[in-house]
Image 1 (cartoon, rainbow, N blue to C red):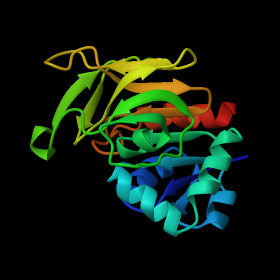
Image 2: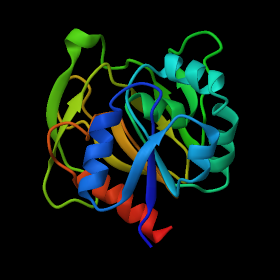
Image 3: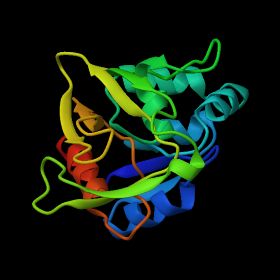
Image 4: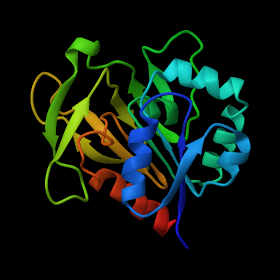
Length: 198
């Protein structure tokens, strides 16, 4: 059976994720309502603005259904702001900022700085033979991981060397960077493999 992978379509790089997922042979569609979420086998949570996305998820009555589905084991992949939404803990968040949770990680919001501090770097990602060109835009990084979390990639140069920027825990995966831009589908391919094995 072909997996049905939704993309949370409240804000952010929705079209780009839909395009990459479609190239990998899964059924894909935007998710804005609880009934659309209910028809997903897996979900991608894109980059955007994490506080805005959480507020919109509450307005659209999606926040609690998202938490329930992820707690029940639905595979999910968060990129940039999506990583923040999947994290159990946030540093430098806004007062009272909520997450969906599920990943036993602490993330630092906007850790790499402002928009002008955006950058690209070739990263080695566990499970891929060749480096990935990673694009960081006002990105978080992972401050700490729980015992069940696997580190998939770390910054390899510059002042942030060693910072964790990709993780996996069971059916959940997250990156600080934006694999949906740049024309390389391999990181999404890792997630699709995870979905198929689940």
